[in-house]
Image (tube, rainbow over all chains, first blue to last red; front, side):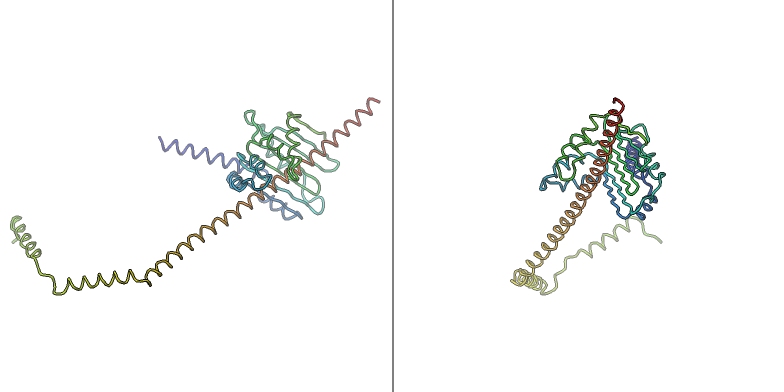
Length: 194
Length: 120
């Protein structure tokens, strides 16, 4: 009986971990990621799992002025995944790539905050929040431009008040602005398709 | 013909008795043991031996201490790299949100202008 309970717990833990991993893999399958990286002139890839975030937090000991605010923000997060590709010329990725990424967050848990599609200029902008039982459990940003593709996935309880604190840190102004935006437009700020 | 159990027991007792008969130690054994002990004590207490022990101890401490420091240094480097990654991720996030903000502002401006035109 005990063995069954332990197996069940281990199974649930494994499923949760696989679930987190799937989120990232679903966004950008490994092969697609490789293709994009091969075509891009500049690539920024950051994969920070829960354990990596915890490890990094240990080294934010307050010696630098922004350590405390960043530490507070990342504590409790399940992961931060960032992919940023810059291309020398447009047309290095098709709309199907954007669609594939969008599909991965097309579940009822993901609530759109901002959705704007500018067909004329070939730009797509999306900001979604993951809401589970009324609680904020993640944030997703997709910014697709002809020569740039940015995907940000933050899993876990994103503390908006902590994002606000980062506003005053060097180069992190907009993080603060989004906390205000979320309160102001908790529903959807959906831009029109032009 | 095999022996009865009692006879076998007696035979065993006899063997045991023979084996346990007290025998005198070989001549000079005690002396040799005492001399060997004295030699060992003399070598343990010699200054050369003390220095060698101290050197071995220091070497061991240096190796262990060096290992601990190296591991800590490696850990700090990994921690610093992880910290840098967090900052990079937040910067990219910030940049993306900045762009979103700019686009929304432009969108709002356009909406405002259209509204003004309509009211005229």
